[in-house]
Structure formats: C-alpha cells, structure tokens
View 1: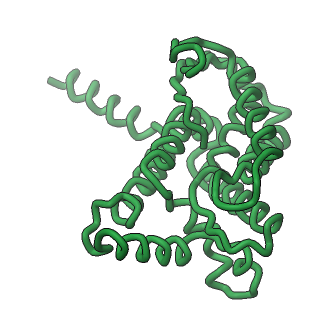
View 2: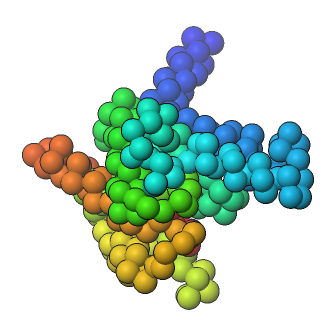
Length: 244
C-alpha cells in the first residue's frame, strides 16, 4: 500500500515538472479561438454578413494594426500581447499549436517556466512590433502567435541542434523522415526568408515576424546559454507541414 502511494506521488511530481507553460499557452490560445468569431462556434457573433462584420471588429480590437500601434495610445501598445492569443482560422491555430507543442516543451525544460514565459511573451511582442514598424502605414490587422513560436524555434536550434526531429514533407508523399533539428529548422528559416522576399503587400502571412522572432530566439539562447553545456539528449518529435 505504502509502495503504491509512493509510486503515485512520484508520478504526480514528475507530471508537475512537465511543460506547464507550454500546455497553458496552447490551452489559452485554443480557448480564445473557440470563444472568438473565427471558430464559428460562438453564436453571439451571428452568422453570414454579421459574422464577417463582427470578426473584422474583433480582430481590430485585439490584433495589431500597424498604422494605429505607434499612435501613442496605451491600449494600442498592448495589442502585440493580446494578438499572441488570437488566430484567424482553424488552420492558423492548429499549425501554430503544433509547432509550439513539438518544440516548446524542451525549450521550457531548459529555460525554466518563468524564463520561458517571459521569453515567449517578449520575443512575440518584439516580432509583431517589428513587422508593424516595417509596414507602419498599413491598416491590415496582424494576429497570431507566429512570432513568439518562431522565437521558440530559434532557441531550440541553438539549444538542441542535434535533436532528431521527425518531419512530414508533402513533396515526398508525407513520408515520416527523421533529421537533426538544425537541418529542419534552417530549412524552415530559408523558406521564410524566400517567402518574405516574394510576399506582396496586403493580407497574408507575416513572414517578417517569423524571421525576426526566429533571430531573436536564437540570439537570446546563444547569449544566455553559450557558456553552458548544450543539452545533447536526442528528442523524438513530429512536425507537420504547417508553418507558424
């Protein structure tokens, strides 16, 4: 009896040491999405034309609007924080949460919960602000956790370059292939770089926010942990073809 109690206590203790912040961020984003108009599951936003109108107002309220962000309004300066929890579609949400789930746990374990949370919020804020400053006259609304999650990817590359990542590539018929993290993440970064140079003005993916977030995350991890021994434990992860 006593032995079983000890085993259960150890199991609870190990669970408490898990990636609590990563799971909480995923849960928070999912709850916000389900309660918002983009999910289509909240009847208070109406249907049809009313839903579209409500959605536009919702995103402008909680998202980043570049030509408003630097207007001096205190409320506008908070929008890069609120925008981290707002997503525009199911695909947008699931793609971001997949990347956060795959790469966030080990980064959180290495940094610690409080540091990881501060890192996530600060880099996400700066990535969105950088995109807004580069498009200061744009009235397009920017939402999503992409900048913060890109920072997590950059930190992961610095901290766990030899971790094995299982990836699914559409052009290889979605065959699961395992590669070192540095190959997968540098390939992802190169795709973002090329897409950012080809992107036209207007609504779409904020590739610049991805590049800024990734760079900030890598630089932070390099400066913060460059004198520490890098964790070389292999990791098994799964990554889809969706991009954060």
